[in-house]
Amino acid sequence: MQASISLSASPSLSLAKSNHAFESSFPITSSKPLNLRFCGLRREALGFSQLKRSDSLRVVVSSRSRSKKVSASSSGNGTAPKGFDYDLVIIGAGVGGHGAALHAVEKGLKTAIIEGDVVGGTCVNRGCVPSKALLAVSGRMRELQNEHHLKALGLQVAAAGYDRQGVADHANNLASKIRNNLTNSMKALGVDILTGVGTILGPQKVKYGKVGASDNIITAKDIIIATGSVPFVPKGIEVDGKTVITSDHALKLEFVPDWIAIVGSGYIGLEFSDVYTALGSEVTFIEALDQLMPGFDPEIGKLAQRVLVNPRNIDYHTGVFATKITPAKDGKPVIIELIDAKTKEPKDSLEVDAALIATGRAPFTKALGLENINVETQRGFVPVDERMQVIDAKGNLVPHLYCIGDANGKMMLAHAASAQGISVVEQVTGKDHVLNHLSIPAACFTHPEISMVGLTEPQAREKAEQEGFEISITKTSFKANTKALAENEGEGLAKLIYRPDNGEILGVHIFGLHAADLIHEASNAIALGTRIQDIKFAVHAHPTLSEVLDELFKSAKVNAHVSSPVNEPVAV
Image (cartoon, rainbow, N blue to C red; front, side, top):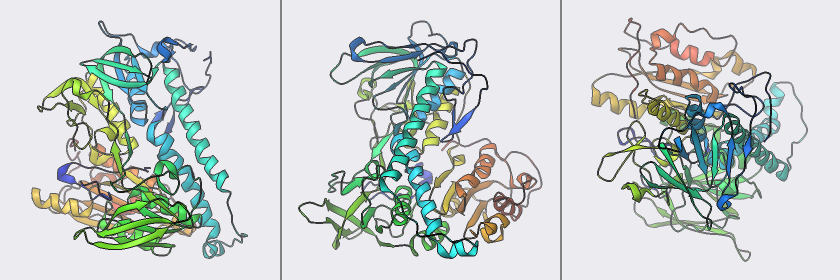
């Protein structure tokens, strides 16, 4: 998820991961063009897109080799460069590939995108989108079930219930709607959507086609790999898709177990615990590290545990591995065998109704043909430099080949993949661009939400010690925010980590109502190099939750009085 996502950082800024054992058509017109957004990505949906010079589309279907090519004729897709079929070919039509394709067309590049499954990738079909639908339901259920909260607002509500199939249909319908929107947006702009599995044959050459059918070969001046990831399942765990499941299965919500074990307490596990407990399940976390939520800032993690775990029907085992999980069958429950993470001695055995494997995600990079260009993966990830250019086995950059998103492992977030894709397009069109990954926010859509950008406190202290500067920390509570109190949602904290000598923002962490929306003021400040002493003058509407950040920045004590950008963005 985002939220069904895993987060991987560079070696110098490694984040603790909750990985159990993964160390480490038809003519249309548009009278009122609108620019919509979804998943942090510009979405120009069919019927809401402005076409330059021509408002008509033509869809051509070719049955050649039983492989379909959907082409939307539009002047926006440019013309092919001399000697090539396309300026840019993207392998993978997830959020990252979609973002790169739209930006490429905007830049005048003739673009094609290859997809072997369905448009939208993990985020739209098996991650961010359907998970948010389930979490929307869990949020409503919590509100209706919280008698004390409702009474404080003067409300009286009868007992709340839910229809499991109705909830599942909501998630599926949302994914289908967004998938169609993404597909239509690319068609509207003239991106060629090529159906089949993409394989690199050599420099600037790709083949695609369905299994068992003849392949088509195309050439491109530049190629982007954007194949994404799949759920990571450790050895010894037998997934049957019924009682032992991954997030892919869980999002279908085929049943709600009375008792479910969740292996891993990162973003994925935490969000699903929110869903299952709201729908009446008891949850048991199994975490390999010594504390729950190891990827979060420790202080935020402790507060989140006090609010999201302790009061709910959740217990947990930390410092243990699930070495073997056997699905339920013949009337027997799911059996989980645990060992001590350090000593490897047997620790315990659990019998539950179901088990969700939320141990992170693994890159989907097999059968890409990387051997044809002398590229070797590292733990499955495609090695890249700070500009997302692929590195071969000898440490040399592979000309005209890039890799973005989960497949390169830099930051396994849908919006990070999109940002990387846009950055690559900037480069291939002549503008050098290095993405500052420390400015990319992350969020966990629990109730309340958790969000973060930049460094955690331990990471900031380590960096300060290595580079010889001091850090300061300031915090503000949601209990001091008028809007939060009006909502009777005062449980929350915002934390700022910064340099008092120059006002540089090193990290911001938020736990509370709409934290995922609030974090962007901080992430944009980091991206633009804005100093605290400058952002203090920003005006926020009153009363709004945004004043949580306003108070946070105003409470920081900065020694410097000179206003200027901190520095150029640093690649991570």
